[in-house]
Amino acid sequence: MSIVIENLSFTYGKKTPYKKQALKNVSFTVNEGDFLGIIGHTGSGKSTLIQHINGLIKIEEGKIKVFDIDLSQKKPDLKLLRRKVGMVFQYPEYQLFDETVEKDVAFGPKNLKMSEEEIKQSVKEAIELVGLDYESIKDKSPFEISGGQKRRVAIAGVIAMKPKVLILDEPTAGLDPKGKEEILELILKLKESSAHTVIMIGHDIDELSRYVKRLIVLNDGQLVYDAKPAKLFENREKLEEMGLDVPIAYKLKCALSEKGVKMGEVANDDDFVREYLKIYKEKRN
Amino acid sequence: MSEAIIFENVSYTYNDGEENAVKALNDVSLSVHEGEFLALVGRNGSGKSTLAKMMNGLILPDKGKVISFGFDTQNKDTIFEVRKRVGLVFQNPDNQMVASIVEEDIAFGPENLGVKREEIIERVDFALKSVGMEEYRKSTPFKMSGGQKQRIAIAGVLAMLPKALVLDESTAMLDPKGRKEVLDVVKKLNKEEGITVVLITHYMEEALDSDRIAVMDNGKILKEGTPKEIFCDYELIDKAGLKLPTLLNIARRLKEEGVKFDGEIFSEEELTEALCRLL
Image (cartoon, rainbow over all chains, first blue to last red; front, top):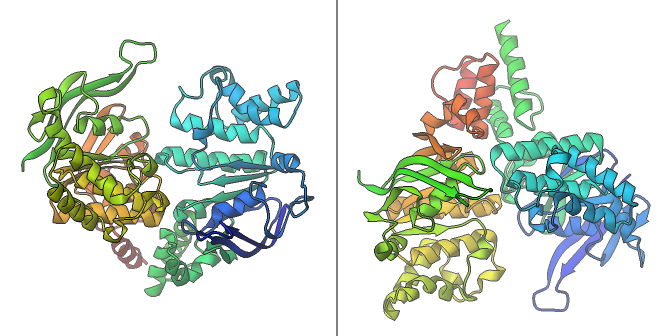
């Protein structure tokens, strides 16, 4: 097991008139190899939750264990934690700052006190892994490259620390349709080749359900569902009450089902096309 | 139909003459009709934002000209006439607030124009009502959601009583709820107040509801047409680096797998009907 969270609660602005409970008794486990999505409307607690996993917020109540690091202890080894859990924030390209792409990507590994040789090697690997040409981009300023490239460089900065778990907060926000697809394919590739466990926050349910194998739903700081996508969407009405949509493919499956066409499990477009073609071909034979 | 904004053979290059010169617009001619809802789509770097900023003279063409509501944007004497008529709303809601109280923020534009106090109050009332934020008049924008902030930004533009509203990816940073809030407001302004709308977006679902779509690529307009004309042109969609709205993409994939549809597919009902008929 990679991450175990037990009864996690957190309140912002405690003892002030602005206090707001962001997490209420959240418990779940992330297994090695999971591809997990977290959804919930703005203010549901998603960001507060992932900041806990990376040790950016100190635990108030409850327990978190990441591999063998117990974050509920007094002084957990945060350096080791951040080496194991890589975090890509929203619009990560806003955080690029150094003179060259190479130096920017090397910032994390340097902080982790890797050796010079190790740094050079991991920076090169990371830049190549995110699909950029190391030789031609390493000396460029991160400010003169395109938006899509910037985001890749920012992700490379996290990958260079060789995390075992990769957490991404809305990694496709603001990109054009092709850019979105490229980043998602990149995440899939990273999952297979480098970080084996991926947690992704997203708002676009059509997009998310194409990739993740498990979805956690947060509502008002509480974990309300933890299921595989096709099963989760069976709670369509409840999800819609929470302001969450189900994928268009799932809606189509429901609409067909009302007209008496019964399909197998549908979580995304691929499933819908496959399941429909199955029936279509059967009828024609 | 009269024209709101006319682009005549417009070209523009950033850092012209320098090593890092980028040609953003290449001989673009386009008319935005008065009262229409025009969606402008295209990949990053295709020239959409440059085109938007030219509509109220924030960027002036190197070659060609832009006529906004009868005024040439290159004429310095009438540039304020253009800015009064064409309002821009940008992507990041946090970068567009100038005051710490909502009503002061909205009054900022008309105050600068020297509008009388009584009229400013009327305009602020109208603007807040139009975006459905009347009860936030005395609140601070900083604690609001992204969708609310963008509605305040739109109200700030409305207080100038513009004839056209240009939204440059104004929904990109919002969650689905915030996007819907902003889009509903914009659609209402277009329908009820007759305000011309130019919506730049990466969400093809948003373009689906427009009167007309212009597709840009590489500093040029590839095609203009109704949503049907654009989204039925698969070759164009691929060439411009776009994707079909999810529903239409499912129909396309089924077609490519040999499913023979009869009739046009443009809505969930049409697709459901067609898929049932085929079984």
